[in-house]
Each structure stands twice: as structure tokens, then as C-alpha cells.
Image 1 (cartoon, rainbow, N blue to C red):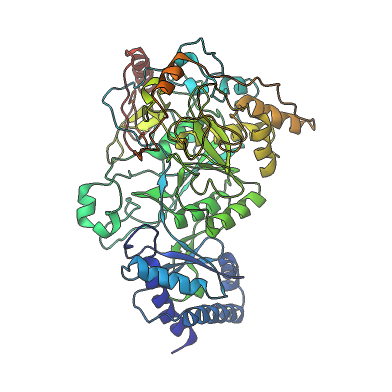
Image 2 (image 1 turned 30 degrees about the vertical axis):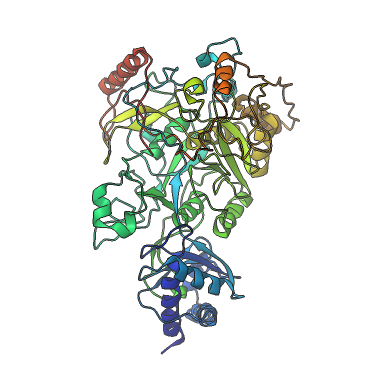
Amino acid sequence: MTTLQRLARLALIALTALTAWAAGLSDARAGQGLIVRLKDAPAHALQREQALALSATRVAGQRLLASRWQAVLKGSGLVAEAGLRLQPVGQASHLLLPGRTLSAAELARWRSALLARPEVAWVVLDERERRLQADWPRPADPLFGGLEQQWWLQPPGGSNANAIDARLRGVAGFQRAWSRTTGSAEVVIAVLDSGLTPHPDLGAARVLPGYDFVSDWDSATGRGYANDGDGRDADPADPGDWVSAADRAADAARYASCALEDSSWHGTNVAGMMVAASNNGVGVAGIDWAARLLPVRVAGKCGASVRDIVDGMRWAAGLAVCQRYTETLDPSAGCAQWAPANAHPARVINISFGGAAACNAEYQSTIDELWARGVVVVAAAGNEHGAPTRPASCSHVIGVTALNRDGFKASYANFGASVAIATVGGDDAGGTWGSLLADSGLLTLNNQGLAAPGLAAYAHHFGTSYATPIVSGTIGLMLAAHPGLAAEQIRAGLAASARPHVQSPRMAVCSSANPGRCLCSTGTCGAGILDAEQAVAYAQALAGAQAYQAPNWAIEQIDTAELASAVALGPDREAAAGATPPSSGSGASSGGSTGGGGSGPWLLALMALALAALAAVPRRASASRPG
């Protein structure tokens, strides 16, 4: 038996034992893996270069890598196990895939044994990360809350004397920002999400060739999280991410822990907020009128895996990523086929998925590499009224939490020291105070399909998922004003230009004892309230080699009749009671076209008429569905 064959056998042992480990789960499905990085591991891209060089060089590298893995696995005392594989992940890590389902206790023992080896830098579970939008029941009414459609794009303003829908003290102020710039086609914003569906209000000319990194697909059974008939490919279209009772019945090991839900069309929702066609007389406006969108599909059924998110980040930034793995137990075999190079690297990466665990080494290593290249990752803080989720909690990430339109923290939004900035994300009717202080959510693009894509539509949404593209869109405008901004300058500019958090003589500050609607501080919700116009002014000042001078902001004092009534009910207890955060997703559906093809003048006119009719509907609650 050769060294590589012995290594393969030992790798099988480790993979099976390690894969089942997952916090909070009694078992892990076969195929879920662990991401393992050896200390000073060679980069996968370097192995590709060696493959093109002298064969002796490559063989030497293979033997060295094989001997290191052999030492790790033997030293860990792992027992021979069948059906294991090794696949490249990220820059220099490997995903260990099992051949059977193990208990959490078994896998924890294997993980501990591996981590005890001096050759191992880290071991990270390839977990499924979920969409970070708030959960909210789906009312039948098409226009929930009855508030104005795109209030989140309007200038900030209002006072305690105004009616609730005229108080916009928490919005970013894009109308004012547009007086400075409406964007640049040189700016590329990547959306790492569930993919895109066709929409007449999302111009094809501004959508760049993207990629699908959802890797889980079993061609033998025709099942998998990818849900599109294959694994990684060059088609970032969203086939739908619904999970049905039939899915669970057919493959309980894969879907038992997934929520039963209709398709979310989350990627279309998020993309529409940033780059929906603007000033064209149809549908809604987007934040940036010129930037180009890079769709990177990382999420399918049941969310997104760490492995797919990491590789999606790297590809979006222009780095080499593996598309098709070598199905072998030899870790030195590397990648069977590399994904085509991304010809349009993004400066901004928007991600609205995450997990409750702490930032892990695989995330941080990738994010640090991107930050050094000037690429900014903007991530949602999450919606569990607690600490920010990862990757928003990682260093060198612009973590975003959500505010009510009046400037205080939305009921569901996570908060903490790792949050960088806050902006509106819609405030639902959940919690003790919800019926008094809720808004309509953020109106954006949607799709009416419950499973596969259906008619194009519009909908209101809630969640830090939707606060995040507001920040990403603002960064796009900053880069239009000053393309040379470094990553640290972008973060500094958002902070320097932010408006101060609102205050109130009635509302308590955010804390673990008061995690619902509450007053933000720089220690819980970032530097302040995002101000898009001043963020662009900061970029313009640096572009002209001038010092930026922030306005002398007045601190808004929130003291309204609605708030007085809410406080009289006691604390906003949604989180304290352990209730599920309000859901959102596809809210009121309006306008529309077929899911595919172009939009002729007749279709655009029809959509305009439909939207006008929608705006005229009496104020009622809008529908939403989990996403």
C-alpha cells in the first residue's frame, strides 16, 4: 500500500467521525462535513500552478501534504472507516465528507482529537447558515400597515407632532444623496444570496455573469439543497428554496431540521433594493441607478453552508475557487475543475445569511484576505434580539442592524459591539408594542411563485436582511464618488458621517434585559444612523484631498403619543418571552410579468398601472411569508 493509499484510508476514518459534530443537534446527515486547515497548508491555487510545472515538483508536494495528513490522522487515533472524501475549500483548507451518519458525541470526540494535533490550525463545521430576515405571520391583506411605499428612500425628517407615517428620523436619506451622485457603472456590488428571478424592474444590462456555488446535489437521487438539477455551475438563477412535507418524507436525513416554507426569493428582494431600475416610470426605484450587480448564488433549500459562502466570497472578489472536486481520498489531488475566473470582481459583497455561533477561523481568514484587497463585506446582524450573527460578528465586516422608521431599534434586530452601523429594516407588529409602533416594511422586488418562480411582483419585507443592502447601496454611491476609497476609509466614512442615535425620555436603552424595541448607543448599534448623503459627501471630500466636516447634528428626542401608550403596556417583551421573531418575506404583491423573457412596452405599461392601482388601495395589512 502506497503512502497516498494509506492516507486515503485514514482520511476516510477522520471524515466520517468528524462530520456528525454540530452544536445542538443529536445527529448529522451523511455528507455534512468539517472544514479543516493544516498549519502552513499550501494554497490550492499553488497546487494548480505546480500541476503545470515539472511532475517531480508536484509529486514532492503531494508526498509532503500526504505525510502531514497521515501524521494528523494516525496521531488522532482514528479507526478505519469507509466512504470518506476530501475536497478543497477556500484558500488552503479541506472539507472532510463522511460516508455515514454519526452521533454528535462521536463527532465531538473526533473533532477534539484532531484539534489536539499540533499540525491542525482549525476545524470548522460546514453548517447551514440561514437567511437573516425577520419571521412574521402572513396576513391576507395586500398592504400591511398602510404606510407609503418606498418611505425608506425619502429624506429624513419629521417631529413628534407628525403622524407616525410622516416621521422618518431613522431613514438614510437617498433623495439627498442622489443630488450628489446616482452611481457609476464602474462599481460592482455582489449579492451572495439565493440567486435571481427575472423581473421587468431589474435591467438585464446591469446584471453581470454570476455563478452558482450551492454544491449539495445528489444526481443519483435527484435531491439536494441546490434544487436546480446539479451542483456548482455558471447559472445563478433562483429555482426556489421551498421545503415541503414531501421533501422530508423523501429525505428525512437532509430536510428534517429545515422549516417547512414557501420559496423566499430572497436574492431578488435584496438585489431589487440596490439596483432596481430607477427613474424609468415603472415599479420601484433602487438605491444605485448605475452600479452593476454580480449575483452569486450560495443559498438553496435550508439556507447556505459555510463552505459555499466562503467560496462565494472569494469568487466574488476575483480569487480562484474550485467548481468540481476530485472525488478521491487523496488531499493533494486538489480540484478537478476550477470555476471560471470572475471577470468583474466586486468591491462590495452583500450577505444576508448567517449563523448564531461565533465567527470561525474559516470566515475570518477569508474576510481578512478580502479586506486586504480593498473588498468590503456587508453583513446582516440577525433577527433574534440577541448578539450579532456571523459573519457580521467577524472583524473587518460592516455589520448592520435594523431600526424603526423613527430611529430606535426594531423589535427583532440583533445588537452588540460588533455592529458597525444602523439603518431602517422595517419594524413589524411583533412584540408588546408592535401594534402601536410598527411600519409597513421595505417595498422591493419579489416573485409570486410559492415553489418554482412565478409572476414578477413587489412586496414589503422586514429584517436586518433588508437593512444590509441599504448600507451596501450607500457604499456603492461612495465608490461612485471616489473609486479609490480603501476598505478602512469606507468603514471610517460610514461612521464619521452617521447621525447620532435617537434619544427618548420614555424608552429604555438596549441591553440583554431589554432586547426588544429600545434605544441604541454606539456600543450596541454601531456608530450611528446611516446617512447616505453625508457618506457620499465624505467620499467626495477625500476625492478632492479635503478634510470631511460632519454637520452639527441635533440629537432627536422621541416622545410621541404612540410611544407613551406602548411604554404603558410594559417592556417590549417579544424576546424576553422567547417568541419567534416576526416573519417576513413576500409581502404585498403588485404589478407583475411572467417570470422570464424581456418586457415589452405593453408589459411595462401594465406594471405601471398595477402599481398605481396598488397605491390607491385603502390602507390594510400586507401579506408576507417566511423567508
